Image (tube, rainbow, N blue to C red; front, side):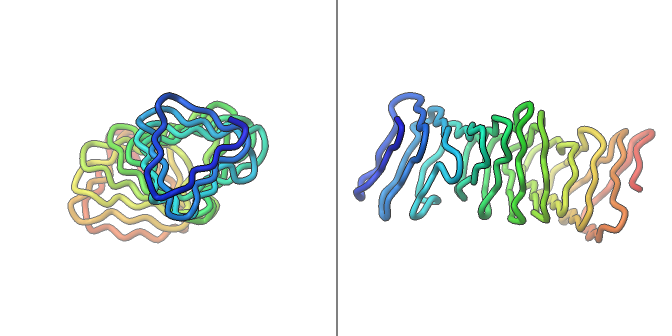
Amino acid sequence: YANLQITGAATKTLMASTSVNTLLTVGTGATLNDGGFTLTLAGSGTPLSAANSNNNVFTGTEIYSAAAATNIASSTYANLQITGAATKTLMASTTVTNVVTIGSGATLNGGGVTLTLYGTGTPLVNNGTFTANAGIVTYTGTAATTIAPVTYATVNFNSATTYTLGGNATVSTAGTVASGATLAISTYTLTATGATWTNSGTVTEGTGGKIT
């Protein structure tokens, strides 16, 4: 589609993977269900305009792929992929239940809002660039989770499980290890100079691992 509009009170469900090249509009009272398929949003600017984006049911994969600056709609995504050379910016608090993937050459800008990652394993895969921009990243997975080796402004570890660094990482503003949570530095370096930390859980260091 060039432009796709969803209106009316009934849920509209994708029946196969779909691409929208300019603008997808979900009107007031309408609900879009991606049907577990891949929805590619190739438009720049704001390619997904939803009156209440949290009414949408995204259980598949949403891909923002424009080659120009793009705003990412606030919603709950199952899988969110960022591709294309231009920066994609979160516009409001966003939740991802499985995986955020930043493709090679792509940039995700935290937009100064909260990105909540419910996935376990590796819920943030960074093959490009992550720019925190004063945003908050909250890891809430309830099973073993690998922390992306990026620079965070504020990062929170909220559940009773172990969060393990997947490489050297930096926290510039603040970090929280909640009660029951374990932050495992492993063999890497966590640079936290100037950051304020609240530790109500456990922090461990492996051989060669350190916090500076």
